Length: 502
Image (cartoon, rainbow, N blue to C red):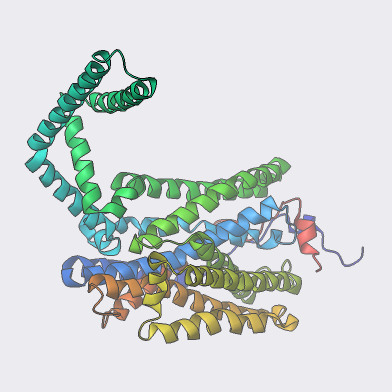
């Protein structure tokens, strides 16, 4: 058909050049700001706990955008999407920010930084409970062992007495004999259970006694000790890093190899493996936000937490892709491969996930409000106190949903790059306020034992952390943009994407 674009005309791709000055500035701002932030946290010990929340806010915000890029890459392949081929490399570049942002989370792993125990109270509380249990165990072990030995001896004596009672009365009525035999069986069972305890194993007895005291000291931490313990927490962080980083590294690597040799096997590998990578992505992201965000208050829980954070990540990463795409086109790139049809489709996805985010956010609130369980409602009670209530209604209800929803309903807006980018910027601001709303209210409550809802002046640390991580994020994103063609130039679906009509 006349007028159709031919993928062979674009087989050499398009390479991003320049922006060296911008990358340099972003690097100075990012790494310089991070150095200043960490130095302040190290030397200004009184403010270190407050700064921990600031760093978590910045890292989680930019990590959510990176994870969203990985999600769109996986979805593109798993659904065998054709329209998004020309913007897929941008998705891959955004997803490849994951390892850089996760590395910025390393201070959360190091106890000496002061961030970990300030953010996650279960670490110091668990340590204190275990120490108390250890002290109680040493103080009462001898008595505990003597009581066990006495219980075993008493149980054995009761069994012998029961046997003697039956054998000494040969003329018992059937009912009486059955009653004594049943009673004897119960005594034997109790004696057998006590006899299973190796009273010569002092180490085993001490561990059991310590566990009992730990349960008395911190029942909830004891019940969750299989998940909330230092060992598994570090292992999970490593698995998140390997899982999320490994998936995007493999997919982007195959994609670039296809650019070089045009072999369709890479396309087939990406499509086939993406279906298997999706569960890795879902589990890694869900449990990461469990560990980093839900565990800010280890007594609180929500079954919709992972989906809620995923919805925000997917929505706003698509918005960032729109912004990056528009800036690249203004700089003279991708003008011949990206059309208003692509913007229209990306706008539709933004609308879909605006609705999805609102649905999940309302469902989570409604279910917790309806169940009215103390451990669940405390999350919203905190965020409905003081100015946080006005904040919630203004920025999350109106700003995060109603404003972008109304704008994205207009078809023309979705086909106007400048307007759609403006909506995307608005969404990103609302997303940052959403992440802020999740993390920061815990700061005042936790650090002042509930006497203050906010920490005066701490917003300066929030701003410094955000600017620092933003600079580092922008620096590496620009570097990735220039490392390969801006679009997959030899993908079998390139023809379809070049000529997409929706």
